[in-house]
Length: 166
Image 1 (tube, rainbow, N blue to C red):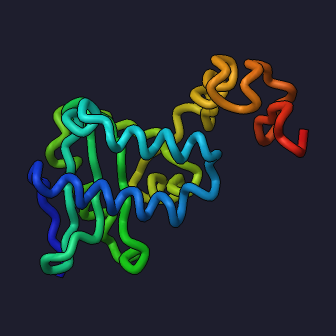
Image 2: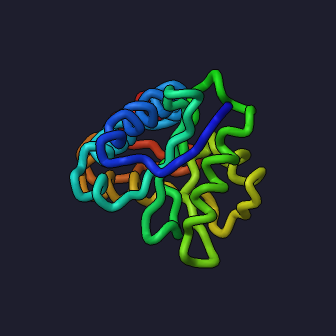
């Protein structure tokens, strides 16, 4: 039987390892190396870790899913379930627990492409088109791409001069 509860500070590392493992399996293939590194860096930041409230789903004593919120539950920042537990209601149980604790009437999320259908099934509606702003800013700041600060073309993907497809 799956149970859900708020995680303790001592359990946070395990939850973030689960998030990274599931991210690497399902989401990282769609991200640039810089995006994958940015995710890892965020998980390691003490101020980020201190800003989240984390819920865990357990099958017995085994952590099988996690959801983290910020801003008094108004924003979902992490939401991951182990692959063998996908499509078994674990995510819905995590979301229900977070929703019960949320202090506002609106909950937001910046979904990865992989999770869009999950959020739709939970009742979320898109309020903005998919955003690539953070990566574009990194290119302009010479922190990504070929380091020139120039964007050479945009379409479905963003290309810089060093990209062999450009």
